[in-house]
Structure formats: C-alpha cells, structure tokens
Image 1 (cartoon, rainbow, N blue to C red):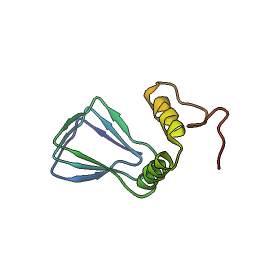
Image 2 (cartoon, one colour):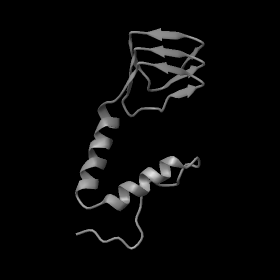
Image 3 (cartoon, rainbow, N blue to C red):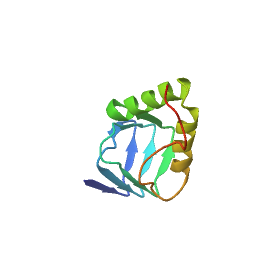
Length: 101
C-alpha cells in the first residue's frame, strides 16, 4: 500500500485502490475507486473533485440499482443503513422473512 502524507494533488486522476492518504489535499482531481483494497483517506481536504466508481465497484452499484428497481428496495435500504453505522457488519444487506419470486 503506497502511503502519501501531506501531499497536494491538483488537476490529476488518482486511482485510490490500495493507497493511503494522510492530511492530503485534492484540488480538481478525479478520484477513481475500482473495487480493490479500500483506500485510507485520513483528514484530507477535497476541493472541486469528482469521485468515480469503476470496474468492480461500478458493477456493484449497478447491481444494487437493478435490485432496488427489481423489487428489493428493503435489501438495498438495509445495506445503506448498515453503511451509515460505524461497525462493519458480518454480512451486508439481508432481509428477514423475505421471499424471492
């Protein structure tokens, strides 16, 4: 994992997977997460950036969108509520008493 400390990134595209950023500044950057090892973004500042979910990360979001509009709103909502909590769940999503047709 590459570690960046107190670096300013400007007008560039950065692949976030497997990277650590501590006290860094991002100005007008494209930040791309592809579904690999999650990055560490510790006390960083962001100004005029875009965040892109690509490859596996993007496909996961597309799958969740398809599920939501295919009758699994409760599962997607439960997953998003799990994201809002600090603790990492043993598994994501899940419904109680749900039936798949």
